[in-house]
Length: 76
Image (cartoon, rainbow, N blue to C red; front, side, top):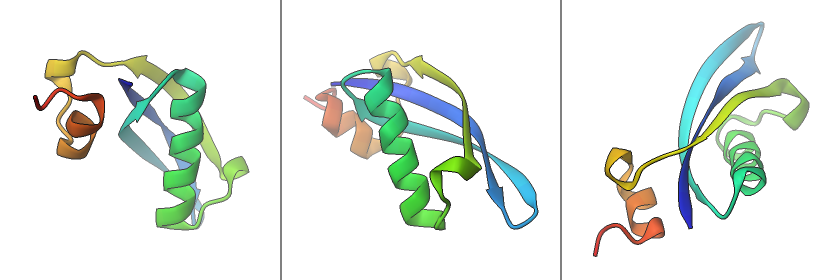
């Protein structure tokens, strides 16, 4: 797995809220799907209200989320 940083906006109420998420995924499409799932689960936001603007691969040393570090195997 690789680490990706996904950023964009989502509609919360009447305002667009910016977000940045670190996810562990096989590729960019998988990272996009995970963000839709996470945002829908945590905030109850439908996919059409989420606008993903950027998906970039991350270097292992730049990952800050301990769960993602473990998932990509960088904690060994």
